[in-house]
Image (cartoon, rainbow, N blue to C red; front, side, top):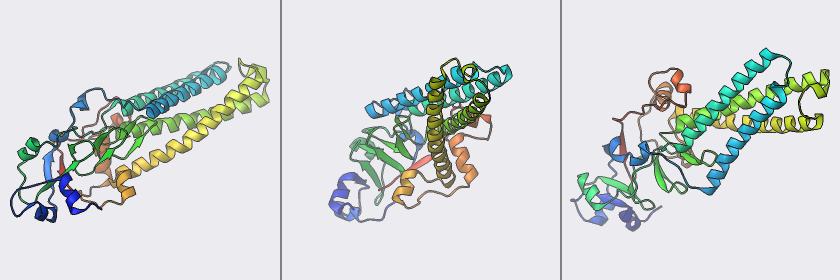
Length: 309
C-alpha cells in the first residue's frame, strides 16, 4: 500500500479544491478517453521483444514443430504403402502445423496493446483538462499514463492494455491485440500434438504386425527412438497447450485477465455476455476468419479506456 506522499508522485490531480495533500485523499473519478489517444505508434509497425530467454524459447518452439514434421513425414507417412492414408494425414498435419506457426508468428510480432511510452508529460496531462477531484495514474517505470486494466510488463518494459501474462514461448505479452493469435496457437499446437499421437499409435500397431524393416526407411532402433521422442513431445504439448487454451477461453468468456484473477482486482468495467466477449477478441461477427491467424480482428476504434489510480 502506497503512502499518501508516494501516491502524489504517481498521480496527477485536477487543480482546485485544496492543496496537493487534500487531493490525494479525494474519491477516485475515472476519466474516459478515446482508445486512439492511448494507442502506441508501434501498433502498425513491426513489434519484437529483444529478450534472450524469449527468443530461445521461440526458436525451440519452431524446432520442435519441425522435428514433429520430420518424423511424421519421413518416418511414418512417406514409407507407408497406403497412398491415400499418407496424402490425407500429410495434408491435414501440414495444414495444422502451418496455421500453428503462423499463429505463433502473429502472436510474437503483434503489438499486444502497449501504451505510448513517456506520454505522462506535464503538457500532455494539462491537455486532458482534468476537473477537480479527477486523477490519472502515471506508471513510474515507463513514464506513461496508465489506463484502466493495463499492467506494466517488466520484460517488455511497457504498460500493456488488458495484459493477461507474458509468455516466453511466444516472446511477447498476451494482451488486447494479440490474444486471438495466442489462443489459435495453443489450439493448433494441441491439434497437431493429438494428430501426431494418433499416427504414432497406428504406426506402432502396423509395425508390430508387419516387418519393422518395411515400416520405415530408418533402422528399427532409430525408428523406435524417433517415435518415442515424438510421442513424449506430443503428449507433453497436448496437455500443456490444452490447459492454456482452456484457461484463455475461460478468461475471455469471463472478461477477466490472468493478472486480474491472480490479484483479485475489483471489477470496474461493464459486464457483458460470454458471446460478446468472444466477439470482442475474435471479431464481429462469427465466421471462419475466427480461426485464421491472417485475419486481424476489429477491437473497436471507438472504444474508450479509463485512467485510474
